[in-house]
Length: 362
Image (cartoon, rainbow, N blue to C red; front, side, top):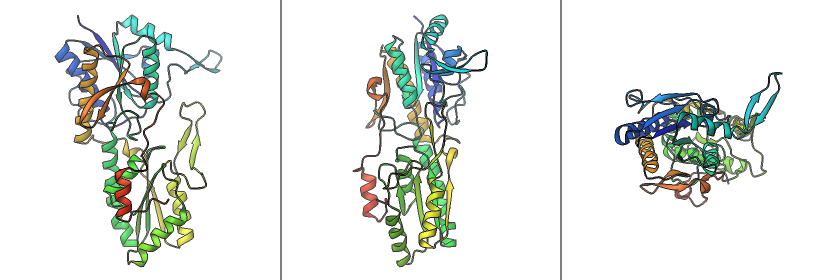
């Protein structure tokens, strides 16, 4: 019998989302003879029953395209959904039963959720309500528990590495300190990987609290050896040894209230005052999320999408697809929900970095 599969993309946008949508749709339609629909703007589409049909033809040309044709949202938790009353007041309601009614009305047999921690936590909650769900791990931060890598991460690293390459020439020409602030929230995977690939002299990650004095030592050591410039890459969620964290603002009605950002500028001012060396900071920001998806992520996203469809075909539910070693496997959503994958302090890249003279500020 044919099945009807729903797909949604939740959380922040990410290179490779469209490649997953394409793989799921093509696999379901071509190989299994199933029908596929895509819910718009993440879980909001489930609550509002807003969707579009996905066919073999209308997913053509998506492989390298950034963003998501379905739209996405990182605010619309269906278990804590923002509703505006007739009098203009706002309240939050549990709309999960409405979601289940919508899916039943449309004849949707199973759901594939493409997203990070928040998306997969909600997916786990729906699986406990009896909905067949399979998750696909997405985040440029690479911090989703249970998988060795998420799609979109390598494209973000590529963007950050190209920025570091460009900063080298201007740093050397003006004998400056050039600081690149990258995303990652509380995980330092982007900063660590791009920093090593881009030849950064100082790499600051949230997992290692930094002492400005140690950064100054590394900078002055380079100057004494005749290198009058330094390249620093800083993850947005880094903390000083005194515990201070730079927060751009707080969004009270968001499930992720804290907005990080600005540590690069703070550090530039701090280091310039201490060393007397001109310092400049650049925030790479959402450039890391956009643009064309690199081949590695296109392939990984395709593998994830095909594996999610196959998992449903095999009758699996309440699982997330994960890359472990070279294999795509399924892991229980119960093990993924609410957990983060941080950079271990014994990570080989940290050890190699130290051995070649990179300072981690600790």
